[in-house]
Image 1 (cartoon, rainbow, N blue to C red):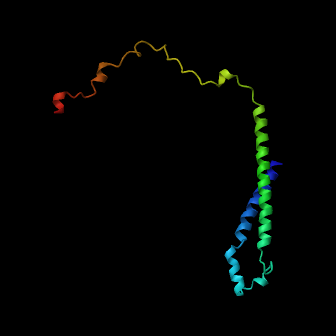
Image 2 (image 1 turned 135 degrees about the horizontal axis):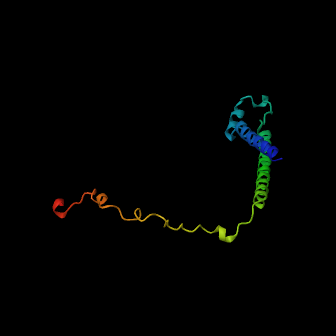
Length: 130
């Protein structure tokens, strides 16, 4: 059912785009008054304005109704998915605690860095900076 609604929704969106692009602007009627042969068109001397306007309104209504239907279907689909999950206790929703430091490290690795590593950094004395 949802796929059918999506297909009709897409078709109505494309139809709206095509119908809007086929319509002429308000300034196009000025050429008809100077004898551009508008009375010989397919839709008569009035043009296809009323036909295209009415068709656009119908497809726009279908588009908006289907948008609401799809929103309701998505809402109902999400409720079904959430109802299948087990309830989570309030204690489990809290942020996890900070992990405790590791204490089983041998004493030789837990000591300060050797003095040779500290001597690799050059030291400037006040006399050298002048």
